[in-house]
Image (cartoon, rainbow, N blue to C red; front, top):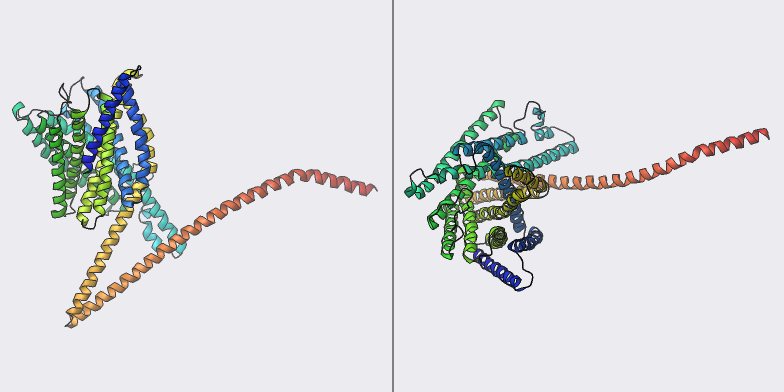
Length: 584
């Protein structure tokens, strides 16, 4: 399997590192572990950047879509963890003593991010606006309906294109806020409920039982809170007696983001319990194992954790085949299981490194190795899973399940690289920190790094992901329409076979008339799309012609300005000639 290949390649990397350290020790000039970490980071970063070009320019459109989605999710997870930990450090510095944990502060922090998530989605969608802002008027809420009343076809087309452009732009803005703020809220939920999981409420002997009980409590608490936010949104929708497309966008993105928050938090806490069950020690809230034996794991521990990931894969497969519900509960369970697969694979690789890496591989070097191996395993897995999804013998539900697993791989890659940069930021803050305390310096560095990364993600990566999502939705709608037509045709054939009564004949006529209307509507839409494409090409051609005409006019204008400069001298000479002729 892809995971086995990834673990084999991991051992190859570790062997290469060991040989490198041994060879370095044999030379006159020795190299430190930090030198090796920088070297591996440099080679891994270059390989990753060049690999991105291969992945995003693959011949398979589905593989390109998965690659773009994984890269987008990676960047979002990376920035979300950095920002959350930076803000959390400042909150702990302001309200807690050093090394102290407070459950109330953690849950207040979670509530603040949840509130920010809802308000940002409501404001960006246009469903809610501040009194000082000029919101969209009611006449602009349904411009498509206005376009239908315009007799001029060009004006109608222009209104339609403008509205579609606005919706795409709003979709990119909504996606950027929903994904980034959703991931930050998810990690805030992990922190808050993880603090509750760390508490020994039932005593030391029943601590394992308590950690497992926290998982359903977390699901119940988050689900109840998000039901409350849904009711609040419904109250806002009823304020204008109707639900327009902006409010629909707010509701849709809010639901998807809330489901992602539940999936991220529940899956992480569940894997925390599994790790506690296997090794007998609960990791801290961030998933790090503390103590002198924290890095001592065996291959058996890693194998058991890997087998649990296969169990999650089986659960996801059974769920997709048996429970085909499109309900929100089904989406939440699918998110939980798919993200649990990612977390178990992530910590499996971490434990394999602990079991097989030499003692020289510690700290930053260990995190760099882990990030490189996780990235390689994930993209190799994407390749094989994509081939599996393209197979004819896999059904539609199986393909959806495989796509969900692929999209969750962004958690592994983003979280692994974030740990490398988190150590880098922490080291830089402690060693070269100009701002004191260290928490402030860490927040400044995190915000500065995200200031560089987030705009590039929003402007150049996320629009590509949105385009693939729009294309995928259009294909799904097309498939549904084709299935509906197929069902109608089958109904016609069945009616023809059983048409012994007048009612059956009338039903047959209705079905045939419906098919003719559907075909005509399909042809009209196809012609309109072709006409829109021709008009767009014509507008582009005219724009190019106008651009060239502007250049010619500018040249002529420059020439005329030159003639105007010489004109006074010529007029003076003519006057002199006239005066000479007059005197003569």
